[in-house]
Amino acid sequence: MKSYAIARPDAAEREELLEALPRIADLSEALGELVCVAWTTMWKSSTHTRLAEAPFCLGSTYPLVKHVGEVAEAGLALAARAEAMWGMKVDMDRLLAILLLHDIDKLLLYTRTGTQIVASEVHGRIQHGVLGALLLAELGADEAIVAAVSTHAANAPFRGVHPEEFILHYADMFCADYALFTSDLPPFFAKGR
Image 1: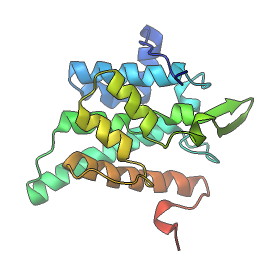
Image 2: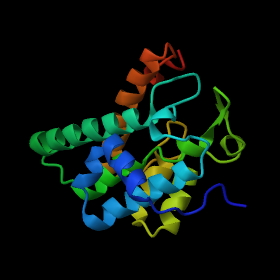
Image 3: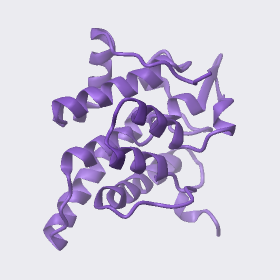
Image 4: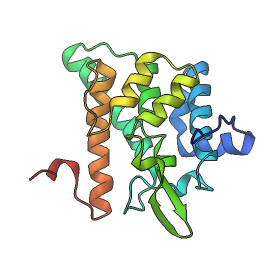
């Protein structure tokens, strides 16, 4: 049995989603709809009643949607800098979709039990990024988006080499470390010491 069921947002859900992640409005119509359906699917399949209550990680109250919004802003800034400094050509619509979608599976990896957030059953079965990528493939997302989401996790066995994946990596690690700092958790850059 799948961990999720495809769900399209109703008007109130779409409004909550656009309020939480306003950069969705900057996507092309087709990608914007794909992002809305993907987020709604994971959200409605999760134990989180409101998007804002889903955590970035275990042991943290830092909101997942705040992290994703910050990754989008950092990634867009990095893309602009990479183009200005190096002439790097970036598909901005694809990049923004990847930035907004990279952590959608966290809605299902962490579950709410009363007031506690714990690792879900799927957390122990499927590596972070893969469940989101499976959903995106099912929704017909471009393979470049599916690949970026599936391989972005810090412990992924391999990484892509396209500009969008490069930018996602640094934007995500930068924002993840801030979320970890504010939660009194060890940041990625200090792990392994």
